[in-house]
Length: 126
Length: 131
Image (cartoon, rainbow over all chains, first blue to last red; front, side, top):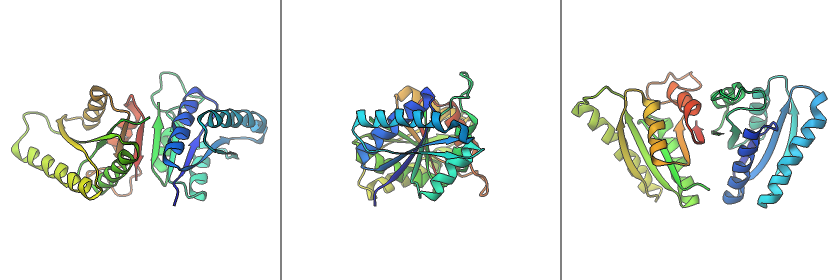
C-alpha cells in the first residue's frame, strides 16, 4: 500500500518550504500527496486557487504528481485534522508557522494544534 | 534530501514506534540513523541512570537488527531533556529529528508530552512527531 501524505499550505514562505520538502519526500518514497489549503471563508476561494496553483508549479518542477484541495473550516487546525482523518492520511507535513504568524514565533498556533491532535505522524518544517 | 536522522528514545512504546519509523526512513533514503537517549538527571549521574540508558538503547538496537537497519547509539546527559535533544541535533547537523508524541512520563490521555512539544517548538531542523 502506498503511503498517503498531506501537506498543509497557506501561501506563506514556511508553507512553501514544507511543500517542497513534502513533494520531494513523495517523489523519493513513491507516496501519493495532496496539498491542502484550509480557508476560513468562501470569500478566500479565489486566493486559495492561486496558493494551490503555486504548489502545482513546484510539483511540476520536482516532477511529482500532486492533488490539491481547498477546504473551508473556520478553525484551520481542525480542517487539516478532519481532512487527514477522512483521507486516511499517513503523515501530515506543514510549516512551523503560517501566514498570520509573527516572525519571532517559533511555532504557530495551527502547527501546534495539528501536532497535538492529529491522528497520524506530523512533520513540522522550518 | 535526508542524510542524517536523529531519533530520540526513552523506552516508551511511542519511542519504539518512532525508532521503527526512523529505521524505515533511513533505509529508504540511505540515511544514517542515530538513536539518542537523554539521561535527564543533574550530573553527577549514578550507575543506575547509566544502566537504564544502556538498556533502552540496546533494546532499540535489537529493533534495528530486526528491521535490518544500521544505527548509531548515543546517550547524553541533560536534566532538561528537550534541550539535550536539540543540542545534539545542532551539534551533529541532523536533517530531521524523530520523536514520539509522548514518552515514559506522559499521561495516557495527553495528546502530546512536554518533551515532544518543546522539541517541535525550539528545534532548528524539521521534526516528525510519531504517534
